[in-house]
Length: 212
Image (cartoon, rainbow, N blue to C red; front, side):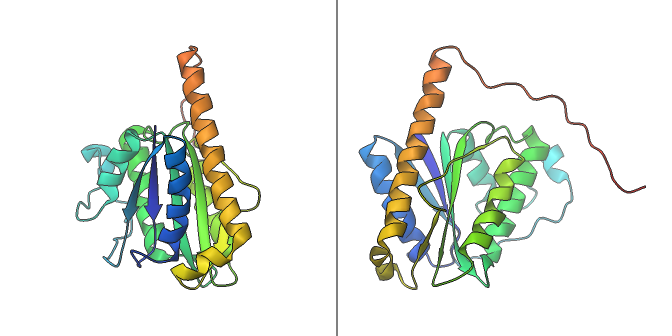
């Protein structure tokens, strides 16, 4: 089993990465492989709604990690998406990245790389804005038939620097329990498939426009 993790921070080894590393240790103890994709400080282009992904079966922009991430998603069993909090909101780069990841996968293959797979968001802030940022990231999963996994509190922790992460004992506990819960759901899904229980096939999309 493999969990694909996104570090949506411009700081390669910042507080977001420290939280992902805490979870990675738990996954490793459960025999689950992890891979962390880090956005870093490189510019991330916004989705421009061109629709070319339906034709190309990938995002038209091919100079960052979006298309590689979607390809890796197809081979992954679960996901963790991490972001720092900026102005009570996720980082702009992680939203631009996920807009293109999910929009391109929707038009290219109907969200197939993400369907019926467990996922979780984690957010880190010095002080405020974690709940709002957590809510924003969770919107992506609700429209792609993913299974959102929770913990013993909302999936947030507090730090200004990576060294601060170890001081938030409750936050660390939330991260560890989240990793265990995600592992549990992945194993249950695998056991179901082994028993011949397959995910349902959704009805064909019907779009209702509310503009008259």
